[in-house]
Image (cartoon, rainbow, N blue to C red):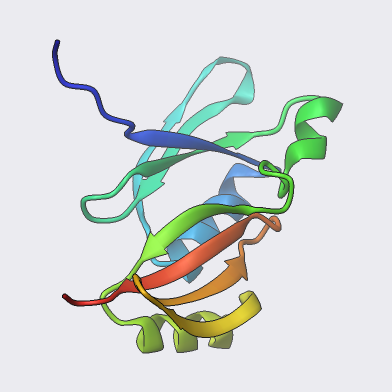
Length: 130
């Protein structure tokens, strides 16, 4: 049947450079690609080690602009796993990231919900060791 994998998820943003600064400078993801395209668009991809990547897609038109920060109707949209929850939680708070739910222990690990630069909700997770 062949190999299948979800590798990239599109996130609608208002500005490429602003988004790159947040996702790389604040969240610590790497800039994988930034390729100019026709019409002033760019193919901008960020990601971390061994995980899915984010395609930062600049909104085009009112309908897309209305979706910035609310791609899932207020539900958690993305999940960022870490090997050190306390380190990253403290660093993100110091950088001004808004946590809408404080840290809590779940069966799968330690988790807190934060909003990215645009209002999309994320889970910051350190998986429980078994």
